[in-house]
Length: 141
Image 1 (cartoon, helix red, strand yellow):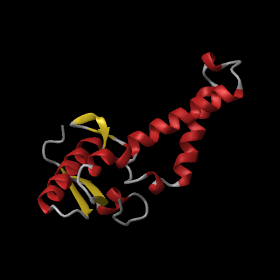
Image 2: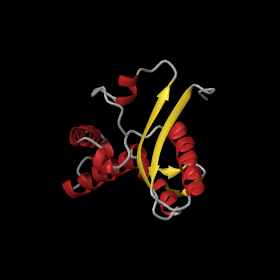
Image 3: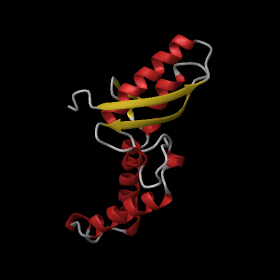
């Protein structure tokens, strides 16, 4: 519990119903404050981050006694599955919605016709803009 020490900005666009769009933005902001996604979409995940995660999961598999003697295809499937879970946890549009885990944030957005999430940023009290944006020093989704 951060006790009011987190702030979130969400930019949404599209849709005819401005009230529904404002509600969507509010719901996404609440979700971002609790789930802390890394990026907006899978395309926003840097290739080197995915490669590093894949490397970590492959090393874990190599050191796992349960994986000893398993075919390479089985190990690759396990690594791919872990990468998929990493993306589901890190990408806003792939995350399960905190108020209804049966749907993703992408599903929630689709409920507001024509709406899309443009970007978001999450701040924590004491964090600088560079901290919130990562190493690039830009505030980005």
